[in-house]
Each structure stands twice: as structure tokens, then as C-alpha cells.
Length: 318
Image (cartoon, rainbow, N blue to C red):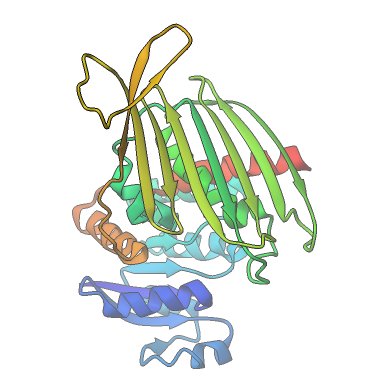
């Protein structure tokens, strides 16, 4: 079993700690949080380490779930002590910090994974192989207001999930970025829209809000032969494909005809979705990477690239 420790036991850190305790792949050695009262409220039998370095020294892997501004110093300390790291998103506060961690992990031959958990969402897993060279991508991530997390721009709070998904699919350099945002309740933008154009011609539109009246996490992909709809929240997906019609005798087939008289047939498909816990899946994937010394699904470099684009969007707003 992999000896693991958790640093930062807020909302997400507490979830990681609970699920790691239930895993057969990890042995939880303990946890650390600067807020002693919050740590006592966890209701866990795990050992509380007053000093983070004592915890780091006692484990093989550290899960860093503290506030984003602390990620860099903690992650650097872990890597310098030859420990693998799991870092919640966003990887760090600055692109420069992220770049340094990527290089340090590479120099030390250590495994680092970033918590962009939507890559393990069962709806996305069910159809990611279907997505092929999309030309246009539309992302909507809307949330009701929650005081937790509004100390940073909605780009880093919510949009970065979709940024990571898009960058994992579109294998092309970024050509241009445009964006606008509005501060409504917070000191940083609460609503943001961004348009990213890639050198291969793909265009991605991102819309994120944390003051919506309802929650929504939907992404749509448009490619040459298909329209793909993905609902991260409801864990549903739909694929609509178009093909040429050749002497189709199916009276129930859905046929459309353009002004030139060309006929196309529309095919609907709802991929089978195996419902899983995305956080458990990312834990398992990380453990596999450590045991096999292989590149994780979401590497530190992936976290760096997502943060880099997020910062470009923020700069455009400012």
C-alpha cells in the first residue's frame, strides 16, 4: 500500500481524506491543517500532525488540498523531500510557480498529478474516444453563489475545469484569446466569457458564472460528422451523427434534405455510462502511475498549461 498524507482538510481535503481511508491502495498515515479546530471536527481516527514537515517525512505521497496560495511552497517542500504529490486545482497561484514545480518533479523523477477531476467524470469517460478533431466547442459552467472559493476569479474557480478538458482534446497551439468579465458580488469577476482560437481552426467558447439561479455544467462539441453533448452535472451524454443516405428503406429514419436536394440521415446515440465516483477514479489512476512509474492522466504539466491559459483569459479581462 502507498503511504499517504493529506495537507489541508477543508471541504475538498476532507473528502479526499475520507475516500483515501476507504481505499485498498493507500494507507493514510495522517493529515495536517493549520486550523486545529477544523481538524478536530473531522471525526476521523487519523493522526493529526502539527508540523507539515513531520507528515511529509512519514509518507510516500502527499495530497495537497490547502488554499491555492499555499500550493507552491508545500509542493516544493514535498518534491525536495522526494515525495510524489497530488495537487488540487489550480496547481499554483502563478504560471512561474507551476513551471518550476514541473521542472523540479522532472529532475527528481517524481510523479505529480493535478486534481482536474472532470477528466474522470463518467459522462466524459463514456464518449471521450468519440470526440475527434472538433471545430467548435461551447462550454457552460454555472453555479449558485457559494462564499467558498470566491477569493479568486471565477476563471480559476470554475472555468479552469473546462479549460483543462478542452486542452486535453485540442492538440494545437493557441492563436488568440479574447474575454470579458463582470464583478457582481466579489472583488474578482463572478461572470466571465472567453473565446479561444487555436491554430488548427478550432474555436472554444467558455462561459462561467458563480451567481447563477441554477447549476449547469454542459459542454457541446461540433465536428465534421457529429454533434456531441456532454452534461457533467447530470452525467449524461448524447451523440448525434450525420451520414449519407443510400436507398434507405427504414421508414422511421430521420432524413433531412438541403436546398441542393442532398439527403442526410441523422443518428442518435446515448452512450452507456458506468456510474463511478470520479474522485475515487482519480485516486486509483494516481496510484497506478506511482506503482508503474508512468505519466498520470493529468500531469503537473497539464496543470501548468491549464493555469497558463486561465491567466491569459484573466489578463484579457483586466
